Amino acid sequence: MFKQEGQGNNWGDLASLGPTPAEDNRANTMVHLSSLLLKKYHGGYVVIRLALAGHKQANRPFYRVVAAYNKRARDGKYLEQLGTYDPLPNIHNEKLVSFNFDRIKYWIGCGAHPTMPVAKLLGLAGFFPLHPMTITEAERRRAQTELIATGTEEGLQERQKEA
Image (tube, rainbow, N blue to C red; front, side, top):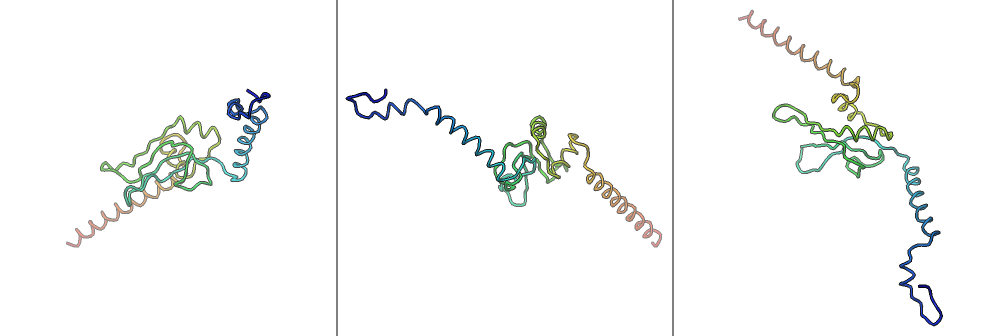
């Protein structure tokens, strides 16, 4: 395979041997170092967040629940899709959410941080405890609907007395 006396350079045979052990170690080290440098350069961590899905319809948002680096754009590349969220109510007045709880457990075990909206959704799904702001918002809505309901009943009673 190597050059023998009386033969010309046969580089095709040398290329078929593959990299030398020193070249092989350098290649592995470069890949390993580049990933470490990338993490240190960005200074980021993995988050579980909402990413806006395609823009197929105007004024019709649809979100993916994804694991992504926190420095990436909202609609940028992500590591893995973990679920979906449709914030607009359907004909049955339901907002549809789907989660892959096994993969969410995996990413949280790896140290991923859920963002506030995702933590609220996971709390409503029973994966996390309810977020305190969710409870506060529900109490405010309940008080507001009671005010509106009692206010309209009082207004109707006053109108009936006047008539």
